[in-house]
Image (cartoon, rainbow over all chains, first blue to last red):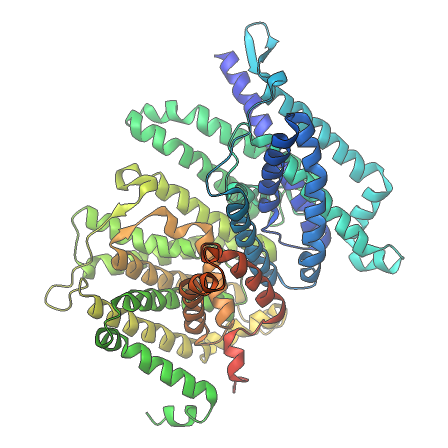
Length: 305
Length: 325
């Protein structure tokens, strides 16, 4: 039982780290540029599709994945320059509408270029085994690698934001955009950079999730909502908040999938229990969010207004 | 009638009256020209206009970006679906229950959501809609993800909803009722407080108005009218499914409201007509330019939305000139 519990907790951590990568870019664009970017999920999807194509060309998972990241960065910068930049000063309704349009565009673009049927990226051979974490507890190496990569990238991001000059500008931009522009910082370049960085994190999350889930149209849309929930729970603009909230959501989701069916079976039929459990674990995430917002209307680590 | 005459002097009045006459005569026209498909498009336009008008109450007049409005459509639809599956076929029972459930739910989540501002409000309304969405897909007894085939509501001796033209006229009458209610609402004391709070919440509070309560009532009303649209939608297709309240539908509703003109009385109608016109006519148009392009019409529609958001804030309504009063 303990082994099962440990594996499920690890699955939750792994899911949480993936969600954190997606949410980090979102919370940065939200916190600094004050942009509600619904199209962030499209960047997640594009990351997976870029990786699928590049892995096909290079015949190497690692190389394809590495090459996909600059492609995501470029795409992010293009989206920023062409559309997003014009939205920063607009109200949230315009932003929702315009980025909703971008979602339609990207979903249809993928259908036109890659075709309507889903693609799959297989787990790379060098990770297609299990690792023994404790005596008797085996864990898939790919998922373990996800945890490692997610942790490393998370630490890198924390270091970037807390310890570097770029991070200092990002934090300054989040608290007072006009002031740092007045101090002579090239704010347009900074915004493009942050947007591109967010796109890289989203793309990385998408391509890492691809071997576990699948590469399909609209794959980023539902997960984006969860990413929004995460940054709202954590407090918009807060990397630390996004991390804590992603971990909470990851655990709720896994607990819901792993343990709820058995629990529900104690008082309802097996079939309806297994049908209701995923729905209930999703519902739980939204209940947690509502509870947090009622308790603290700007999230766990958000700035009080 | 006397009120209508001055309205006819403005372009907006002329267009609106012509449009309403056209819509009123639509079943006769589609029958005369043997275009029955157009009647089903017309029915959808009218129902989505009601839905968009209900969203316009909070989004347009209240200035509150609710991103989960499709959930109220779903609640209305599912109330009808579940009651009909349980053997309660009478519309006299189904419709009031559906609207009451939606109003109660709207009051409940409104009371929680309206504590937040801006982006947090967008996200919490979205989250509550997702909650309803996942609950409905978990209803294994009522079809789960696959949805539920239902029999249409019965109003014995009064009307038969299975008749397409009758159903269309009922929807149209309800749309007129909804728009009439909206126009009364906007020009009432209640509407002025709501719109005042949209432009300056602090000032309205300082004037002594309990802004929160006004907004909550508007939210509940919007939920009730949203459920009405959901009831009609369920009866139109004789089918309900979680898909009718996916967050993309909530996005579509926002698109319709903005396309028509935020806070304009007839905006939702213009918006719904434009939305369905694009959906019906853009694909054949693209196919004319190049065979096969029509399938990918959203590649054009997506950037179109970006352009509308950036450059056409007033929507279609603003093409008809400025508002008077």
